[in-house]
Length: 263
Image 1 (cartoon, rainbow, N blue to C red):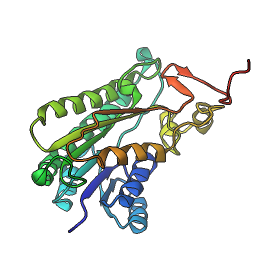
Image 2 (image 1 turned 120 degrees about the vertical axis):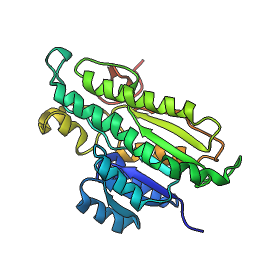
Image 3 (image 1 turned 135 degrees about the vertical axis):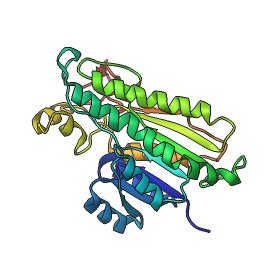
Image 4 (image 1 turned 180 degrees about the horizontal axis):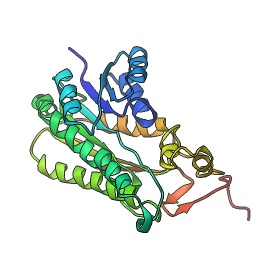
């Protein structure tokens, strides 16, 4: 019996790369999809997966992915990103447009394109059955998809859109063998995300994590994805919010060591 197929978008770095590695260990044949094909090919050799070039903002590119993936059990919509921290009054609309295009319309394009294959994978659905017996759409959102903060208008608007997309899809899939999970991480430290958001300013990016005792890693989030997609087929993890212990809420971040209070 062939291994169930999992497609991971944005698989060339960060959470996407970590998720691809983890799903390979869980028994999936992983399709690695992103724009940087050189990175994908190296990862494919390490994991036994397949590298497929993908730009989620391009209809033609998404069509090319579908042509390469006739069967699919899991889709991890991980491709996304943020750019800029300007307030609403001075933000560049082109930055907002790019974030919406990648974080919302990109999820829409890929999900629509692979949904027929995902539903077909659920033909053998039955309570208690394991991986591959139900289609599964994972939306990699963010805690920014549930709360707003200053300087984050464009990104929170986009991630709220991704959250809404996932919630609506779950309603529309009721009665069909496709489950929908939103993963909403808080502070995650990866090599590229924050640097891009600060337009390449590595000092500002690093300062965001200064004195934070243990921000989440890409592997932490990948663990959440793997757990969600390997539940018995009748179990749907609707929303999984994960934060580092130091981040009690979007506006409550402890900087400094975590230790018992002196009494």
